[in-house]
Each structure stands twice: as structure tokens, then as C-alpha cells.
Image 1 (tube, rainbow, N blue to C red):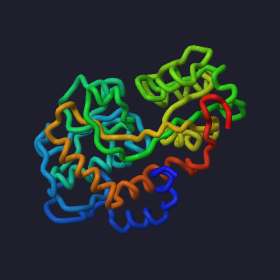
Image 2 (image 1 turned 135 degrees about the vertical axis):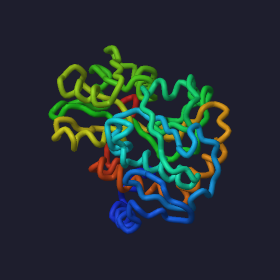
Image 3 (image 1 turned 90 degrees about the horizontal axis):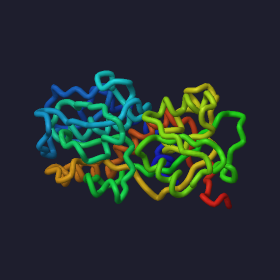
Image 4 (image 1 turned 45 degrees about the vertical axis):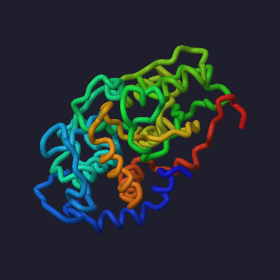
Length: 293
């Protein structure tokens, strides 16, 4: 079972914890003129020390929209979500009173070309190629690649190579489809997830291969017009991305390990991703690349 699946199993307990904590609770010592939307924070305010890009703020880059992860369509409207509240807890424990959210296309986020941010949280899979141009935290969530199709269609591991597959541009899903699945029809990249799912609904593509933890939200939101039929194991995980040579890498790594070890991220996953998932990802069938079970 993945860490995400375990989080969902403990949803009831975790929700009770968050409700008891409340969004106003600062959870530890110190100040508070802090503004973190609706996020509960915990730990000790100012326990860690960073050299932030913006004084008094944690500058976090992401790619919107990302429901469940960042709840809101624009940086100014974000008030909750797994990664936003993860950033809020990092800011709080670093003695920073706000999270400055910056929206950017995913390929730009992982390119290593820009350095004017503290970290990026955008469901970024840690890969050797990306590690050449950026730094990564310890993995904070396991990832698999899900297969989303229109409801009523019959696409499985045996025939998926023969259909039109949509992928998110610049992601590990795109590379997986091109290099491992090797479909007979051209792979179609999309700049954002909603556009990709809309193309699936409208029949411009036949399947989407993308992170399971992202695709799980869509069968609920789209009134069952789409469904998840399978997933591929990747043995990879999501990590926070830092600019290459970041002076704060070691300190940020310590904070993220603390958030993992003290159960904060498990609780955030249950509350924000559990509601978006709507089903246990561990029960989605696993596909193999060669089509054999």
C-alpha cells in the first residue's frame, strides 16, 4: 500500500485531528501575525531558519489548477490543499508569516532555468534527469501513473497501445508513454490537466496517462463521464524541488522529514487528497507494460 493509500484508510481519524486543531491554531511556540489561509499548522514557530527569497515569506512555485493539492485557480485564491498546507507548515516552522504562491507552466518549474523561489511543490516526480538541473527533498508521497478513459469505453492494458493517448507536457507520464508504452498513434501533450480531460470527454483523445493521485479527482467532478481503469507502478515519489545550489536545501530537508515523521503530511493527505480521491487507489487494477498480468 502506498503512503497515499494508507492516508485514505485513516481518513476518519485524521479528519478528527484536523478539526480539533482548527485553522486558527498555531500549534506551537511563538508569534502570530501569520496568514496561511485555512491550513492548520503545528510544531514550533521559528524552529528552523531559512534565507527566503522574499523577506518574511516562503516563495513557492507550482502549476495551477491542481485540485486537492492547491484549492483555487489563481495564486491569490489559494486557501487550502495538500501542498499549500504543506508549504504553510514549512513557513510556520521557519518563522515566516505567509506563503507567496507563484504559478508557472510545469516544464518551466522543473527546467532549472529560474532561481527566484525557495521551493516548488507541483506533484514533481524525482528523476535523475531533473536532479541534474535542480535539487530535491526526500520523497513525501509515492506516485503511480493512472489510466483515465471515457465511461463506457473498453480500453485495457492489452489494447491501450492502439488508441490516442493524452499526456501532461513535460511530465514523467509523457516519457513513460513514449519510451515504455510506445503507442502506435502519436502521443498528444497538453499544457494543463483540465484541458487534457476535456479533450478526453470530447473524443479528441481516447485515454489519459497521468499521475493517479491527480486523475482520481476527475471521475467525481465530471459526473462519471470518465473513469480510472488501471495504473502503472513507477517506484517513484514526489519531492519538493529547490533551485540548484540552494543554500536552504539542508534546512528544508530537515523540515520535510519532520513533517513526514510527525504525521503532519499523512493527516493533510487524508483531509485534502482523501476528499478528492473518492476511492482507495490501492484497489485500482495494476497494468503491466507488456499487457500480461
